[in-house]
Length: 196
Image 1: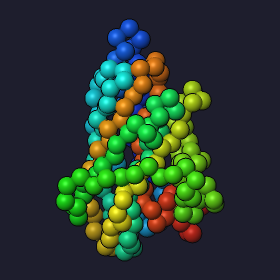
Image 2 (image 1 turned 90 degrees about the vertical axis):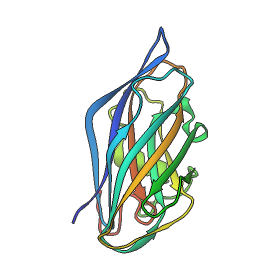
Image 3 (image 1 turned 30 degrees about the vertical axis):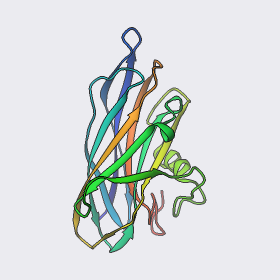
């Protein structure tokens, strides 16, 4: 069974007069086929508007199905404008069928290589593999987070995962496509049997 990592893209526009964020769903969905796990973002919840400088709550509703038993950490990536300084201004937690209460996630250091990523860091590999979601402004970046604990994923078991993101936005005027991606630490976005 082919495996998918799905990203949901949202377009963000700030109203200059009221400094209110307007979130619109864009029509593009990026899908990556990989080997060991089928990770899918089913839907994204986020507010229609938020004042500039506020903390925006975002929820990703996901599933994970393993085609081979493995022990891996959960990885979440977010494409954001650099001016938001999301690595320092974002809190990410998740709950799943095998956890009790919200579990913390930590920013992956920029020099951490992605497995099978030909030496690229997680952030570099996300940009090389997923791109910039048709954003026209050049000042954007991928920020990657990883669960602090690894979890066992038995074969053919489908697990429900809910990722909660608290993202502080800047007051700057910007029109931007937001993208989210989930992955796992064993294969990253590739494997020895996958050619991007």
